[in-house]
Length: 84
Image (cartoon, rainbow, N blue to C red; front, side, top):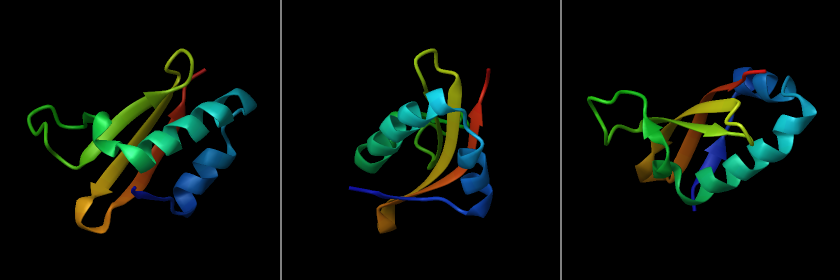
């Protein structure tokens, strides 16, 4: 399993999520703990790159960007957005 880490900036973004987004984000967090490589690369020219994105929510309204630190089995969330 991977450890998912948030900093203060991302925590503020999470705190601002609307109620319907919270359950969807919880599901995303579990997926990131198990298989963060399931997300797509930020840079299509580097498909094996550690900076990834993954959408979440019933209509894919949410997007998370994150960095995988494989040697530490850690995922650093770098940005969360919810489009309404």
